Length: 123
Image (spheres, rainbow, N blue to C red):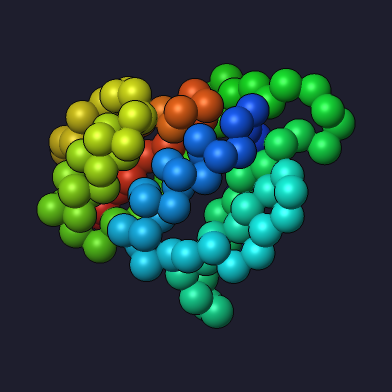
């Protein structure tokens, strides 16, 4: 249902380095880019993820209550992705763990621009 998500950045090169390495764990690669944006995808039937310098020229800011959640294929993958994000400079917002009785296992972090992300597995 979601075609793509997009996050603002104030440092395209720094953000690109973070997401090139992090999104590679989903087998995603750059599929489109311009001087002020980059788009990654894991394939034709996959939604895309992008970063961009804001069109209006104002500073990119994080949204209070805004988060992008990325589905992982297992609990082990959640752990691996969380460790990868932290090693790339992400800030911890919640280490991997069981969050609800329904099998929701998740980890939370903020990218170098402060955007909140989650990786999770429903098991």
